[in-house]
Image (cartoon, rainbow, N blue to C red; front, side):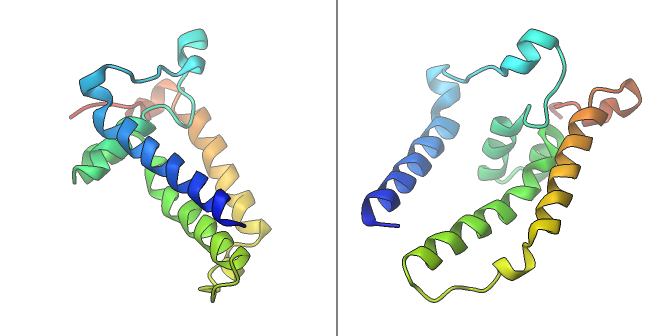
Length: 130
């Protein structure tokens, strides 16, 4: 990875952070197209609100918006490992725990979560505000 790619990642991260922090003020939050069309909650519904709650220190509220918010650290670790590896910087060697079976398990959790949150018995998985 060269410096241009690193700058692009950094720019995307900063723009995403600004979007999350100032979306309420500017009224620019994007609606979920899956929910808008089908009225079914996808696994990502509520993720923006959950990230905002997490950044403001409201951990329980973040969990209520989307329970999958706590899978994000695994994705950030994987991305960090790739960046370190490609820049030939000493790696943390955490990727060895994240083999294909691990990612298949995460994919299974995400799909199951997307299905379960649309079943009336599991209505507590719907993004709610406390």
